[in-house]
Image 1: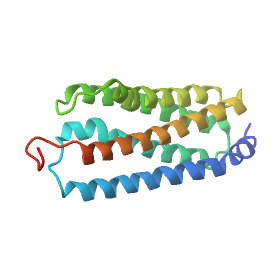
Image 2: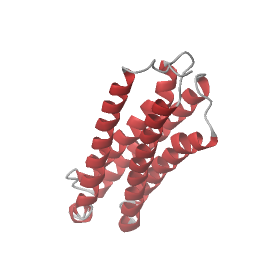
Image 3: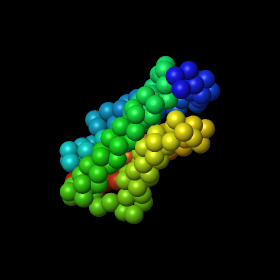
Image 4: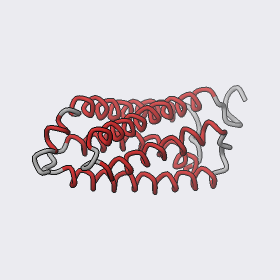
Length: 180
């Protein structure tokens, strides 16, 4: 299966270039917005940032990394599957950390929607990529679509969470701030 990888993966090249570019752009925009807003108000505690803002950057960075993995010149689908499987398992391990951090922080009480967007959906995306990696060399076409769905889900969840973070920073007033 050494020469099968390139034609199968090259068909996805434009998709992953778009997803990776979008993820990189949203990461940059989030950095700029948070930096600008940080000068206007008191920052949230570090444990809250690591529970909500950092996972958003990781989700977007994961979409970018997965796009890079899928654009790499793999000589075999087996090698790509191994890297994707490790990527997905690493993402699941990170999601366990996100859940633990969200439970420990005391600044903000996560609502049901927060658990869905910050823990459940990224976990499903990473699990989808991991399972798809298992089937990449036997059921290539459906597995490639599953990987694409998982990576796109990471991008869309990251976009949602970046927007959610910015809106929270703009709308929610902390005790002791102007207008409070």
